Amino acid sequence: MTAGVEGVSVSERRSRWAGLGTAERAALGVLGVRVVGAGLAYASQVVLARLLGTEAYGAFALAFVVLLAAGHGALFGLSQAACRFVPEHAAEGRPDLLRGFVRFGALCALASGAAIALTGIGLLRHGPFTLQPAVAAALVAAFLVVPAFAMQDFVEGVARGLDRPMLAIAPIYVLRQALIPLLAIAAVGFGWPADAPTALGATGLAVLVALAVQGTLVRRALRTAAGPASMAAAPRRWATASLPMALSDWTVLALSSIDVLLLAAFRPASEVALYFAATRLLQFAGFAAYAASAATAQRFAAAQARDDRAELRTLARRAARLTFLATGAIALGVLAAAPLLLGLFGPDFGAALPILGVLLAGAVLQAGFGPSADLLNMLGGERAGAAASLASLALAGLLCTILIPALGALGAALAMATAQVARAAFLHHLARHRFGFRADALAWA
Image 1 (cartoon, rainbow, N blue to C red):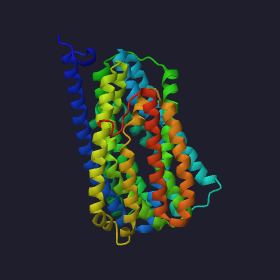
Image 2 (cartoon, one colour; image 1 turned 180 degrees about the horizontal axis):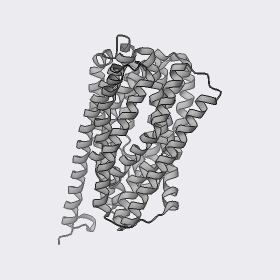
Image 3 (cartoon, rainbow, N blue to C red; image 1 turned 135 degrees about the horizontal axis):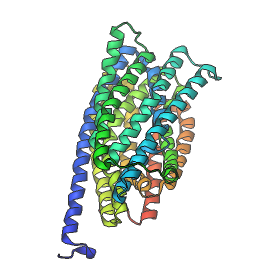
Image 4 (cartoon, helix red, strand yellow; image 1 turned 30 degrees about the vertical axis):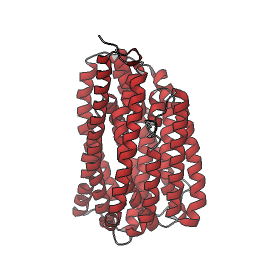
């Protein structure tokens, strides 16, 4: 067998590059599904905005953001941990631990989601909050959806850990997104009011249907990967890694919602609706990073388990370069089409164009710093990642508090773009210091 560079055989190098090519093909497949899902999500939001009207759509947007934050946060980092421990236990030859982790995570997701739902509804009913009745009703409906949403988030993580990225995302971003507007229209057609609680009810039913389909398919994939093995538990090991990831997840979720919440505190619901519409288009720019993460995060963990540092470094750098280029191209396309796309929400939504421009610029700069968050979470640096996220959350809160009263929704966009770029830069610095190599878009230069 002929030796290659650094003592690596030619056959090993070919295998490694074949694996990297598989990762890129998986990322392109995920990107394609996300683009289709984005089109469905955009159409869904247009339908809901037209169906509900500006004020009710603003209440729905606020409740939907709360649902996302509560549903994702209920997992205590277990979705990210699934991307790490499922391939790690498989590489260790421990199908019993793999099956045990999946059961442990599913039970935690359901219990935590139910606890958050009950707590949220209790605070709305008996807490010191003074909310408009329509907003309060929308929030109650959102909290009722939290347990199912949390469970689907965990199932997505398990599918990604099994290296089934298409199974992880298609039920969520295609099936669920397609069902939401259809169910909302059907509910109104059957006599339900065209308001935010009805739209949240349609969202909840869509989550349940998509979860039933996805859960069935993931159970089959798990039987293939782990077989009929007995179950073993390592809760201390799982919790030690998951809790710092949870802190990082919570701060990222807070980053994704603090702008809307503070904007709602300082500005009317109609301005919240404009900002939320801009963020619906911003999500297109995040697809490349999401696709790269879905295709490579679990591969980082697998390469680390094999102690293959060369593959790890090469995979991270290729992911960074392709993510940055794809994000920039998508951002330019979204900005060019923005006047038309925003106009479909209604005649008043064209005012969101400057907001969208600022948010897109921040997304492109953020993508340039590479997959540092995934590297830290998958390779044991989750505490450093959590610290970076906490620092950026504090910065975002400070900037929002200063800029929103002065500039409104545009101030929220400036604050969030600055905080997100600062977080990405800090994560890149931490990852480079910890792992000894650059993983940004310019590392290949």
